[in-house]
Length: 238
Image 1 (cartoon, rainbow, N blue to C red):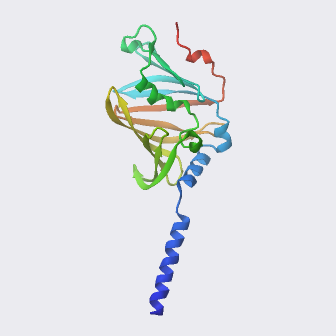
Image 2 (image 1 turned 90 degrees about the vertical axis):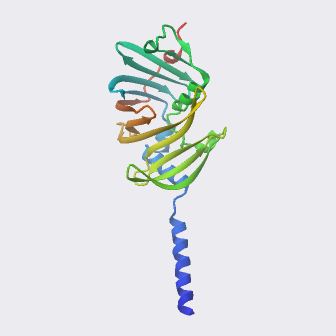
Image 3 (image 1 turned 180 degrees about the horizontal axis):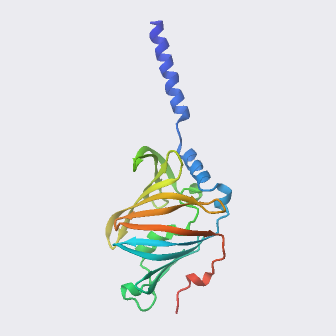
């Protein structure tokens, strides 16, 4: 009986030890913040300029993107000699897409605007999430392309939900899953991030992002941070 009690006590201590060392959602997020450059750097992130290419349907399309933290984002991509533009701000969006037969700037519909507005937050949806009105829960571990990853469930202030997968070794985001609505149709948008690099200032970024549906791959070749971004880039031409 004494031996059985000893085994029971040992098992209880072992279980206690496991729970003590288990990661919490906030601990994982803190490590992700550190991996992305650290809280001080992210807090100081004001602007971003990106160059790269977008691979879709066998074509490679040059892209440029300007973002001003929580104010505006401008995306340009060149297709068959035509420059196409999408702009999003906190209150509105517009596009000028010759590839879609647009000859004048068009207001962005509310559904597309809602999908694109999260790109205004350069610091990421996990950073300072509580002050953004979000809740985050740890949903266990899963493998992403053979790599163990923590699965975090993100609940938005409007009740929307999405999943973020964080590499259990590097603590960098390797996958996100969100349900979006396009023209009344619900779609699962999946992004896979890989080939992380760092800017000279120490900010981490995914050099490759793959999106499904659509099988779109974004390859980033240049990232500049905290360089001047003119507000005129976001103004809709009259």
